[in-house]
Amino acid sequence: MDNIVIFGAPGSGKGTYSAELVKHFGFGHISTGDVLRGEIQACTELGKIAKGYIEQGQLIPDELMIDILTKVYDEKRALGKGVIFDGFPRTLAQAEALKSMLESRGESMTIALNLIVDDAELIRRLLHRAEVEGRADDNEDTIRKRFEVYHSKTKPLIDWFRNEGVLEEFTFKGSCEGMVKELIDKLESLQS
Ligand code: ATP
Ligand code: MG
Image (cartoon, rainbow, N blue to C red):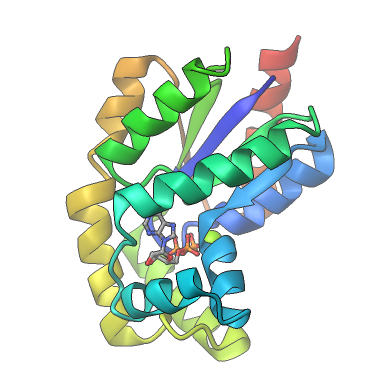
């Protein structure tokens, strides 16, 4: 079964491209950001904890995040269509946990798609999204914090993926359609 990681800075389009890949390949989609926002909306205990971190632009603690991810993964895996991980892993501890969680189920990471988008474009998108979606963490201060966290805790995973032999990089060149096509072509080349 395919276990695909989609990776990139805040605003790099992980959610948007995941939706396109789900449409094309039928994968199950796991967006940890969406899972957490759903918990906040439903006012669960987990939602209450997550809210504080998200509004500060900070990461939810690894242990908690790994538990959530494992539960959601087992639900999606049961559908047997392959899974796309969007927004996870975000730290080295999460990456190691994902690797052993997959191994213990006889699975492995198929590929990590790293979306490369320049900073000016990322900020433009996030501020635009703030206007249309009204996400609480899409304001200038929180965006700055999320970038700091991305650079210090998440970006180092690129080397980790490379070491695992799963890294593939895609640079945004001005067209979302072009990016979607490159991603689909790459995944199709793996399936043949
Ligand atoms: P985009 O979806 O545009 O790429 P993003 O990556 O900033 O933007 P989400 O993935 O939706 O947005 O995450 C929003 C917030 O949820 C994060 O800033 C963090 O607080 C929390 N979060 C999501 N995934 C994780 C994770 N794997 N570990 C810890 N915290 C997480
Ligand atoms: Mg997202």
